[in-house]
Amino acid sequence: MAGPGPSTWAVDTEGVRTYQIAEAIWRLRLPLPWPGIPAVNSYVLALDSGGVALVDCGGGGDPSCHVALASALAEVGHRVEDVRLIVLTHYHSDHAGALQWLRERSGCEVAGHPDYAHFTDGGERPAEVMAARRRRAEAESVPADELDEVSSTIEETDGVDAPVHPGLDLRNGHTIASAAGTWRVLETPGHCPSHVCLHEPDRRILIVGDLLSQEFHPWFDYGYSADPVAETFASLQLVGRLGEQRLVLPGHGRPLDDTPALIDRHRVGIADRLRQVREAVASGAGNGYAITTAVFGAGLDSSNLAFRLTEVLAYLRHERLAGRVVRETGADGRFRYALSAAGQTAAA
Image (cartoon, rainbow, N blue to C red; front, side, top):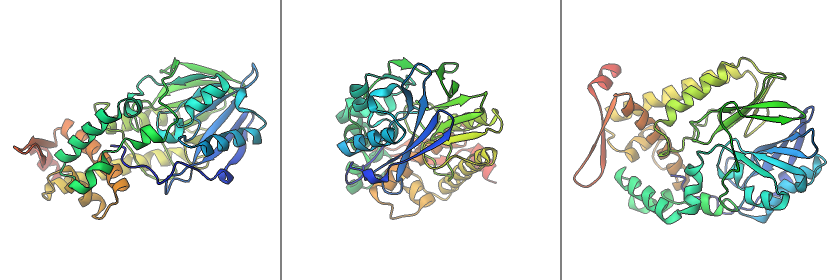
């Protein structure tokens, strides 16, 4: 349930910023139209053969997004046509929105994880995906006046220039050579099925996409993998085993400090949200909408409702697979959640 988009996909092109953060690596701060998410990072990696590889490319859906990307590249001495390869940390509109425009302008190869359907389905089959989201929202007792916006596919249809499939599939062990070193691909699903990180072990540099951020703001794509929460825990553990890195580069904001502490903060934060969901179920909040408002408060606007409901559904899925929560379907087709015997024992 991606939910409604911003009021416009246009961005403030004056918000572009660029930083050289290491030899042969630049960070492009690209403005976004989303309230509360002012910018996304794209990383430029110089190539030994000439030209550059670009890790993520910012939002799309409006020509101003293209202007911002071209302007940022120019600030670090490159043209759009210099991009030989685009590497996606994951398929979301703020990271892959300008992908089609970039590919058409530069002729670059597109590298991304093959499990991209969580995003491209909404752009390629919007009516079908919207109907499925609406059915699930109804089953979770979302109020009728919220159903259209909560079920929206506008991010996938309007927030990207076009859905693009990768020509090069990124899997564990795949490497990307650059003047900044050889980057090893790490599959890190959870935030979404297509998420990967890039690790340069010799220089101890890690590009983490949206797996980690300075603040704990979880988002899980729902419905395209068995257990996004368990996947996130496993991805955090995988990155944690790499040890302390010299540079950790996120999808949003400045480079991260003290990543072991950040990993712990995210693990503890998710565990706390799982506890809050169980407590809401135990208190009698029996459907997804009621549980969401119990955990995050009433009065959520449509955008935040879609965002938080999707998060709660991921937690409920995790708890059901763990055997702590059970779900029944009523005669009206609506779901009801309750603690299992194991869940009641755990809560005692």
